[in-house]
Image (cartoon, rainbow, N blue to C red):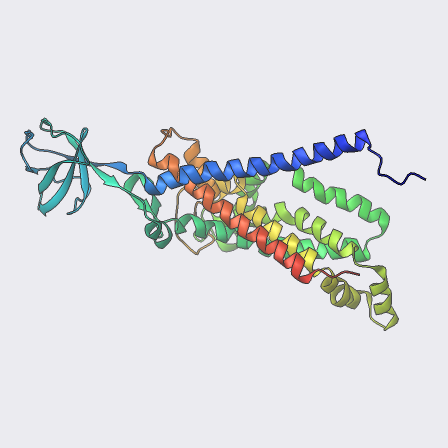
Length: 374
């Protein structure tokens, strides 16, 4: 009897196709990370020139090292690198509006400059400033990312406060209480919520949820654009994700555990909460973390309903712009390629990527740590 493995062409083709699909997904992820990282590092390493709105008040000969600038405009300090047209200069002394400089810095050529030439100042974003400040406005040299991160975390926290208890309750009902016929009707209806375009959810938040909050708490308390309404509607959006994944985890618990619990005199509710839910905790935790990642990455709802300007506030009834909302707003404008605002989009995107990556790694750890094998 020939027991040698026989080559099956069809199976080999399918195996090759699956391998190519997996390799393609990995390559796409690597490409995204590479592009984000490359452009983000330009944001931190490239010298950016900021218009100070100051002009020189006299013509400047190539040999002159002191000159007076106009009073209006941005502040210039010792050690700043400034530029007049193509010539760069290092500021060594500042007395009122009189600057003393070293001409021809960075191997540029000292040249003649006409009166009224605009002075530019070099800026470079540091990690300390990026992660250490709370005001974000790259156009005027403010690079504190916490204004955007705080709004993102606020909307996500509100969303999971809504979605997690509701989604888990729905999952327990579908798994433990609902009849097979009712489950087959209710589950598709819930999943329809996930198929509604998020822009529709955004206008639902703006035209229904915000007026409702203003009616409850007062128009003087709740602004038209606010993170509370956006967070609540994001929570509604991710309820199907939480309920579907949690219900799958609960349904995977062996019926023998339920029957043993009933045999010991436990009620259906006690069995559900004290036996089934703890047994499925790894899958439920994974569902929660995936839902949080989905809430953090939501774009259109926050772009429409939460506000269109960075604002570091802990008041959910105030307008505040999230990371994704800021990316959408800035990308939709007249953005110059390789400008400071352009590079800042990739820095924000890379930070978002790492936030969701950390959550996904934590999700895998939770599943591995608390998984129970029956």
